[in-house]
Image (cartoon, rainbow, N blue to C red):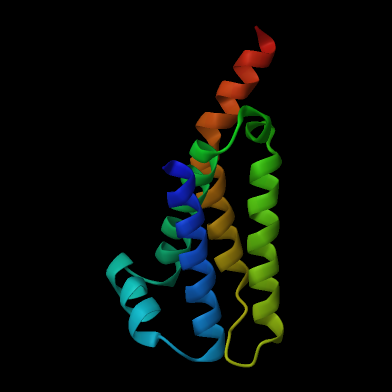
Length: 119
């Protein structure tokens, strides 16, 4: 069930990003952004939830940092594309806040994995 939620959340984020890039769905992503208190808050919350669900849905192998690396790479790709898309605005702060959300949610899993390796 958690894997379905993780994949569904990822699909929602991809759809929201693509619709914003294409100039559609302002009512959806704009409402979410407004509800969460702004652009940076939206990046943090969405990334935090994505990372939490992805870590809950994955095996322990991925908790060694590979999943976090994959998530950061995917977000870097999304933010990097915004640099060349005419309807998007590239902001490095968005990426930093996204990384903070990804890392904060992954931290308990990384610490648990590290403790298991030490003992």
